[in-house]
Structures are given as C-alpha cells and as structure tokens.
Figure 1 (cartoon, rainbow, N blue to C red):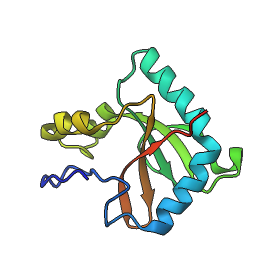
Figure 2: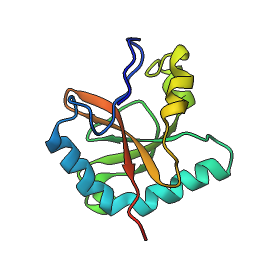
Figure 3: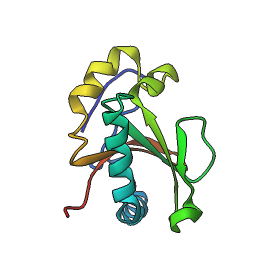
Figure 4: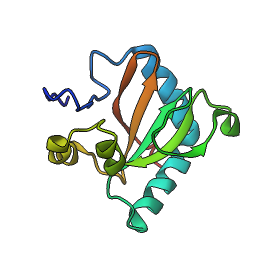
Length: 134
C-alpha cells in the first residue's frame, strides 16, 4: 500500500480499504478480456520512448485524462480504456510534483503488471494488476 499525505497525490493499490471488492471484481473481469491489448500498448509506449510509466485509465464515463484506446463496446467490457503517462498525471495535478519519485519507486515492472487508474463512482485510484501468464 502506498500512503502519502499530499492531497494532490492519489495512489492506491488492490489492497486499499478504499477499493471496493465489487469494483475490483468488475475491473478483473474486464482485465482478462483486454490484458493482451494493454500489454502490447504498454510495450509500444515504452519502446517508442513516450514513457517508462504507462498508465491505463479505466472509466465508465468521459474523463479528460488520456487518449482513448478502446470503448466498452469494442470488446464487450464494462469500462472504456485510455492510455496515459505519469507526465500527464503530474500536469493535471493528479500526482503531485513532490510525489513523482514515490510513484516511480512503487511502479511495478510493466512487463509483469499493468498500471490502471480506475475511476468509478466515488473511487479513483491506481491499481497494479498482474498480466495473465501465457
């Protein structure tokens, strides 16, 4: 669990008491469907030098963060998926400037884990989900 007192920092993980088990269940169901696509997108983002810290925004409604990868209708999922990076989260003050190093320290290996920023109802937070093993 990542804890930080800065109000501009939003960092949570799957063990956070704020993360409703129902939300995590919905995210997990979707993730199984889109994991391969997100893993490839993460690889391309890193390979092309856009960011070493890809973040995928998972939402049911329109949000101003990230670029659309696919809509829920594309794969019959519950959520839309957008690609973003740590830099955008800092620019939008979702991660405070003083928390950049903390975020990077806690960012899990992008070959093994997908960094999701889940927005649903009153919850907004980071979740690292392991990619399914081949």
